[in-house]
Length: 465
Image (cartoon, rainbow, N blue to C red; front, side):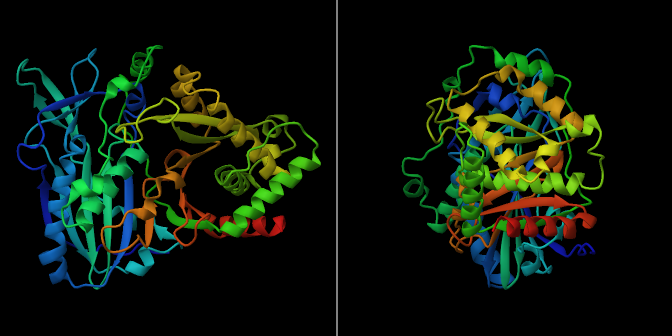
């Protein structure tokens, strides 16, 4: 399965600024939620849209409006145009926006097959990377009053790729320290609305202006200092698996109901007293977890050994805490709590593996209802311990983001991809574009894993019927 050749032509490479004088110099401290992501790989999102127009129409009409609407949107989402500043220790990093800061904006034209790229089938990771901008390297920033030399890093870059008479791909690369998925999706939908309404952003935003009040995040346990101690010597990670293939697996609404019914029935057969959550998130994630364990472990380990039999596998997901911490829904930044579900490998591979996985994930979901931030001081150390052994699956994004509602005026996206998945065992999750109640998962697999996983995925659903 060959990688498509580079067929990109640069149409424009520029910077987009908030309107002059619209945003004062502003610095934002990092909360412990933000510090948690220092050194992580950049986040990457792709949105594919049908666009049956030629290059001339794009450059003369669409491109100017994209830049104008982005400028207006950055007036309200200005941190994304700013920089992450690193003063000398022990001072903590912070986000700084000042007049003249901007977002790199690149427009390209491609002769690649748009239908191929927006499909669900296997596509090489490098094909997606060609559609994404790279964040510019760090530079030196000298504080105007103290003359202290600091390192600074840009937080976001945008690339729009035209496939003449076929489609458009909007690609964004951003630093997770600035925003989590909910905050970033808020920005993308606002930009899309501004473009769709020809710049009437205030009507689009209405009461959904981003809230930057970092004081809303209380830190009685001193988590910012605890996390920062683990981050002083971090290195930026580039853990995207460039040698793999991206593929999307869709679980239809009818299959979701099949999973819910099977899990409920098996739970009742056990006559257990444990309360079981059978939400769409729980049962579909449980199914994907079991499928991935089967793919990775079948034929590679001897289950007869005690160590292998008792080996723990982990499923990691992130829960939005805005509501639990009584924050505005429009709070801009990070507000994610990691949850760590665990189960023995032997049980996940057994006949009731999906039930075992659903119970493990469901317990973590219910733990959230007891209150946010429980044992938060252990988040980093626990994640580090789990990552060290490599027997884990991490979920990126969520169906609750409703990414398929990001409409620039070209209709709903034909496809959206979280392009950085595959690093640290991560897979992505979104609502189904085709039907309400379905979900789709994005995976990064080696070429020799593609057929095997497809068989595991299809056969598993058939066995439940």
